[in-house]
Length: 146
Image (cartoon, rainbow, N blue to C red):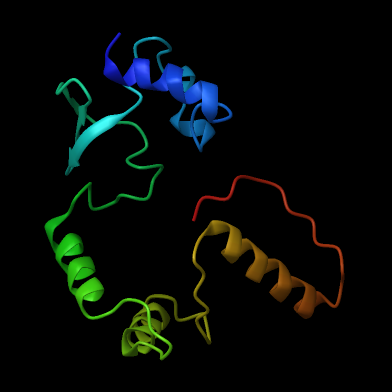
């Protein structure tokens, strides 16, 4: 066992289930041997807290890292956005730019609505479904991975 497993044991004492997501629990893969925590990630490679390097052939950040970890282009764009003030009372012109791009990619859509995460997106989807169907109760089943 390494530093990651030691930290996971500590986390289980103060975080229900030891992690924020079921899919990140070592028990899902190789209990007592799964590294559990990382010190660095780049591309498809991940280093554990003991400095051992792995190829991430698992979920790649729960499916959210199609470009790999720490992609230079993405990192530079985020840094530039933060430097320009990523929080403001006014709207960012990038919102309109991205909406046009999304509409090009999804010609069936008429408009674009942004959400901060899967939970917010689900809330918006339920509200739209209620408005479109004129029904108060909407049935949903499944895992939200957006």
